[in-house]
Image (tube, helix red, strand yellow):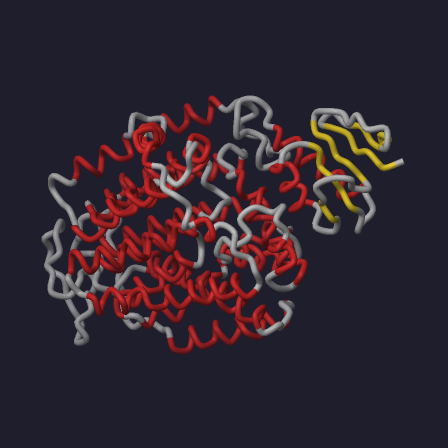
Length: 108
Length: 428
């Protein structure tokens, strides 16, 4: 009963296939979920071999490391920058793609 | 399709551990327990073979792996045939309740309610990059941006094996791997002790703690499988099997090494047998030494290098308070209370000592940090599963339809059991 209550408390939908493995680990939409979605998109949209920086804490960059093995994830100054739930205030970069979960920037 | 093949690769692991079916204790267990033991041994076999291939610079290709693991499978099937036919009576209400807890865990996993963050942070990325590099990727590990590069390699290696078989990494498959470990733990407990209530209790505790501790996908479930195997084997005097469990534990997580030390100390303290403790832990020491040598040669020591860090005695009280809060598992410490109450009726001193020692080691590690708040909140729910499992194993019954240790009388059923000419327990 406690387990069912715990699962129920993590929110609906209860019988739909989630988009990522992080979709319902908390009641609020977890930022890790949005990072996974953004990294998956970036893996398709950014040319292979390019250097990519993920704007945010180290966990977000690690998520991208696993989802973008054909790209080089770097701490800073990547050819491309992924932001999750935010924008990049750096005139050296221009927005390439914009999504609900974040943006992909390219160096000008 | 990738998901199906990835899970199929994980399900194939028992094929590479069939050689364990030659062991006397395994021959006397029921089919589910034998498959679970073979799965644990198969995971160790796969990890060791892939490590060795990497060390001698042989790239992992499907052909290479097919040939080597085909040979392992053939030798296991050829020489590992069992000769006993053990059938255990089913106890329907407990049986179905156990299955219900496993089903709930699978539901939690498949609706993304239990996923370990560490799967995306480092276990998964390591496996993916190892598979991409067709070997243990030293350059990837040497990058300081990636956390825990010196963690033991079994989980990334097994995931890399499944990735190569499936043609891609499956995050869902990795999560389901933890459910398979949970099922294997239950099968080992039930098959070796015959204690259906104990197996149900383990299922209930794991179902809850996996969910609130976000265990699936990380290395904790495989670690628990190896620890359960080692402790159950020790209580059955099956030293070879215990050695496999300890070797798997030390090759899975840093905590596995401290678990091995706790087991060695427990054997010395409880059984007063130095030789036995050394014999049981020898394969684990060899694997640990090999991994440590690999790290030293490649300048990859990070976490292990923090071992000489100072102890902060001033945070002991705070640490104990925080650990006690986590140990409640958001359900008033019920997972601890039930086995502690059962200690009144039954207690096996060896796993009990392991429980106390591993709990103490957890505290010891935490007080190496001046501000352990985040560390404890992020890890204690998972780390404490080791002493909790040892505690549970300490209170298990030893029923006649389990694998009875030589020279001990089974409890519980009170029924006569047969033995064959080699002393193995026959059908109940």
